Image (cartoon, rainbow, N blue to C red; front, side, top):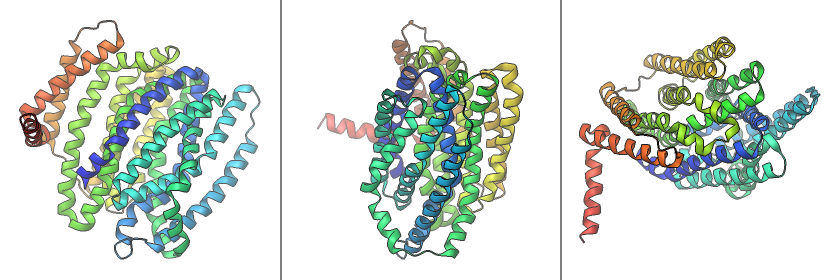
Amino acid sequence: MFSKGLWGYLPANILQGLIGFATLMVFTRILSPDDYGRYALTFGISSLAQTLCFTWIEAAMARFYPAESRTDPEAPELYGTVYRLFAVVTIVFTLACALGLWLWPASGDADQSLKMAMGLGLGCVVFRSLIKLVQEQRRSEGRVGAASMLDMIQTAGGFGLGVLCATAGLGGASPVVGSGLIALLCLPFVAREDWGRALKGRFSAEKARAYAHYGFPVSASLILTLALYTVDRFLIAHFLNEAEAGAYHAGFSLASRILDVLFIWFGAAGGPAMVYALEHGGITELKANARHQIRTMAFVLFPAVGGLIMVAPALGTLLIGEGLRADALSVTPLISLGALFSGLGTYYFLQAFTLARKTRLLVVAMTVPAVSNIALNLALIPLMGLMGAALASCLSFALGLIAAWGLGLKTLALPVPMLDLGKTLASAAMMMAVVALVPSTGLAIIDLVLKGLAGVVVYGALAWVLNLNDIREPALKVIGRLRAKVFA
């Protein structure tokens, strides 16, 4: 199931990467530095609101559908309970947002612009959450094609509508509004099946308590994760200014975009695969599946981080507007390392708590990096500026990874094949050393191609020699098939 998911979600994640770069390239040019900073703040707040109010319901769908659909694929109690809970939360959320915006004292033009962006961003949260709920069900049911297609429509459509909103003058709210509009347009076509099941289903108070008991800690842990990703922007805006927050967000987007897309790809395939392995094969099957996942993640992600660090100057020249470029590139290496620590923690080690249904430990594990991130940012931003924020992010994610690993050992110890990971890390470091020797031509696109090719060749050769992730056997099969086609 893991391999099927990896290949099935590959097109969607390639598109996410391309659109991510296009978003960075376009919006850092058509938005002013201040508006881009407002976008960073709006994105953070709307994501935080969605996680606080709705993610616990999405998590319940993802975790409980495989078990509850065994006897009846329509899972009437699950659907009836989940969607009625969603309706109640939507009403409360709408009233709370309206009251908060009404009480917000915005005096100057800058405050009014930020308030408008926040209001529009919050208004799109419900539509994005409904689409996410549909996607979680498709993934948990193993409908990879449907989930992947929906993801691609959301990604491409959200970008296109966001650009239109920006040209219409919506400023910093444009990218978030674009994602909300495409979700709203898709819902009548993709959610009819789910809404029909919800109407026929019945509400269960007992199920609702079980979903809340499982989902609230998941939401709380993700809120702490989002705090790691958003608090530094607000502290930068406070200690420095909104333009500096925009530059930091641009650097963060450049550094984490590739890695986030890769981790989301692994998570979309790996999370349901581990749940399925545990539910159908027990602990033995789960650990075999998990071992395969962590080796595959390292095989792809370690060289991705190393390569990103080495080509960041060329890539940043192509993607980031000149007004934000220098500051953004200064934080790329540290943010890249932090993104690696964060992704390994979130998409591997923290899975132990959701698999064991001990989601309260997610909160404990995420408290460590969240608290340390705030403390380090308060200490380092006044001393080191943007570099201090990047260092604080990297260190806090590293502490979070250690905490997740340590707590997981006492809950559901997922395997960590040290020898395999060590060989992969050494190969990635060797690749970086060779890429550093490639001379610069002064042309960003040429430098990107030359350094990228050098990295691929060196890492590919090392992977073959060391047989990283048992790559030789499938590689030989592919070569054999190509040879047969050529000489047929």
